[in-house]
Amino acid sequence: MLWGRWWRVGARLRGLRGGLQAPAESGRRGVVSCIDPSTGLNEEQKEFQKVAFDFAAREMAPNMTEWDQKELFPVDVMRKAAQLGFGGIYVRTDVGGSGLSRLDTSVIFEALATGCTSTTAYISIHNMCAWMIDTFGSEEQRHRFCPPLCTMEKFASYCLTEPGSGSDAASLLTSAKRRGDHYVLSGSKAFISGGGEADIYVVMCRTGGPGPKGISCIVVEKGTPGLSFGKKERKYLQFKLADMVARLVASRLMIRHAAVALQEGREDAVALCSMAKLFATDECFAICNQALQMHGGYGYLKDCAVQQYMRDSRVHQILEGSNEVMRILISRSLLQE
Image 1 (cartoon, helix red, strand yellow):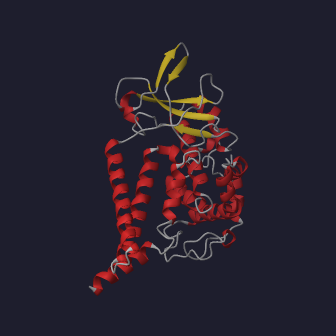
Image 2 (cartoon, helix red, strand yellow; image 1 turned 45 degrees about the horizontal axis):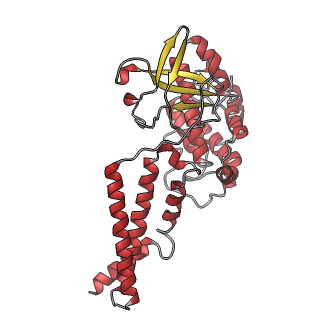
Image 3 (cartoon, helix red, strand yellow; image 1 turned 180 degrees about the vertical axis):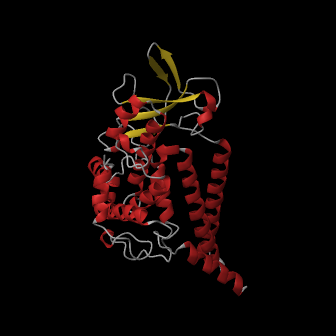
């Protein structure tokens, strides 16, 4: 059980001082708020929070950029997190969990996210998978799967989203048919929570009739015959696409109108160019953001170009005069009139 080690680490640390900021080691000295993140927490929760902040600053923040650029799944660091009890935070203690509350868990995840948000997101999903097995599994399943999940010797992923139904569990189509003492699963899933890296997959599938009451959850282990990772999910929402292309064309026309005014040296050129820059960059970021949403989880992967379009379009709301400055120029023109 990891509880003893958790408290030995926590006892060496003192409560978080100051405002909403990670420890100084993280390089975020300037991020200060009048809202203290430890407000309302009891002494034990403050210790959990301090341990998590310290781990985030020491082990996660210095590596976040490299993990992102090299698309690394930081196994060793997550196993270090598990040594502090972060692998099964709200899993019962008899199978290696820390037995904490959901409030305790939220405090820990918020602190960890200051080091690396995406890694923390995966750790939260891993914890959910371990909790599901702990809560709904048989005693044999609990004692078989939960201990290596709590130590993160093994990693888990949650498989809900499907190409045809998104994350609407009641509409999923992946099915499981019983054959003797086994189930045969048929279907496809789309997810980013450690897909291909995990050892255990918690799969939502249909074992009964239509609707939510026909859904069951099956644990699939890595190496199971037939388990594979295939093509990306593609789903298109016609009305959204129509709105997106209309906003794109409107942006294009506004830019061209402003370009003509600038070329002709018209008095309203500054205002029109400011409007075009403001409108086009806001709208095009919104279009890319919507496109990423339509791609589902795949939109966040670097193999999918939309995530780069979104990041690149976002910066144009700041560069070459921020959009707040554009608003000043536009309003100044109106007031002068």
